[in-house]
Image (cartoon, rainbow, N blue to C red; front, top):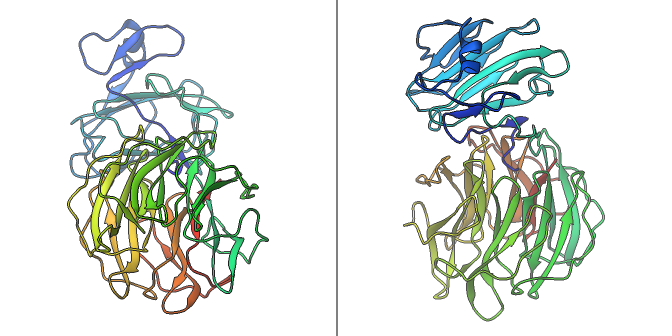
Length: 437
C-alpha cells in the first residue's frame, strides 16, 4: 500500500481500548476501569516523567507518557532483552493521531518482523504495552487492540508502463527500491497511452483504460509482472486518474469518454476486480492526477473541464472509496500532471501544462490539505507519470517537453524533488505508473 511503508508495520488503534492476549478482558488506557490483567502488567512498571522530545531510548520495566503535542517521537527499544521484559507507552495528550510515535526495535524483532520495518502508532488516547517473548517474535504488543494486524512490508518497487512515441507501446520499466529505473521490458497487453494505474491488494498494481477509448485492465503481480488484457468494466475512457484507498484497494476516476469529460469512478477490490461505474461527484474533467494520502485515503486533483479550462480543485477519497465534492483550488491550475505518495502518508502533485509546460509541485498533507506552489525542479513537462518507491519516496518519469523524454526525478521522503536523472528506457508520453512489492 501503498501505504505500508518503507518497511512499515501497519498498526493502527481505534481508540484507547485494547485486548490482552487470551484473557478475554477488555482493557482501557484510562486509570479507572482497568482490568486486573492490565494492573498485573502495569503493577511492576516504573513510570517515568512525561516525554516530550522527538527521540528517546526506552528501558525495560518502565512506563512512558509520551506527549506529541509539538512533534512526533521516535522511540528506540533496548538493544538486548530478556523474556518477559515489558514496556508501556501512553498517549499523554491524546495527540498521537496528529504526531505519531515511531518505534525502532533496535536490532530485535517486532511481531516476528526484523527492524527494517518501521512500527508506527497514530491513534489518539492509545496505551500500548509490549513484552519481549523470544528471538523469533521479539516484542509483542499485549494491550493494543490492533495486534492482529498482519505486518506488511510497504511497496518498495514501482513500474512505469505503456505510453506513446514513435508508436503506441505496452513496454514497461521497473523501478527498484532505490529509485533506479530499469531498461525496457517487453510489453504485455494492448499498446496504448493516456491510461492510469494504481495499487491494490497491498502489494500489487493495475493498469487501466486508455486511448481508443478502452476499458481494458492489466494486473501487475507483486514481482512486477504485467498480466494480459482483462475485459473492461465501466465506461471506456482515457485521460483519467487513479489512486489507492483503504490500505488495499484502488479507484479510477474522471477522464474523457471520447465525447465529453466525465466524473464517474470505478472501484478496484483488494483482488484487483474493477467494479461498474459509480455516479460521478465533483467537476467532470479530464487529465487530472491522483495519489494516496493519510495511509488509507486518496485525492484527485487538477485537470481540464468541459469548457476546456484548466482547473485546480481537488476531490478527497475516503477510506471507503467515497469521493467528496470539490475543494477550492490551491496552486496553479493545470492538466496533464502526475501525482504520487511520499513520506508514508503524504502526497505530491507535480509538473503539467498551464498553457505551457511547468515543473511546479504541490504537496499534500497527511490530512489531504494541498499546499501552495513549490518552485519546479527538473525539466518542465507534461503527459508524465509518477509512483511511490522505497516505501516512503516517489518518482516522476517520462513525459513531453515539446518532444518525448525519458528522464526521471526522484522525490525524497520529505517531498523534495531532485534534479533530472538521465533517461533509461524508451522516451514517451502518456504512460502510467504504480508501485508493487
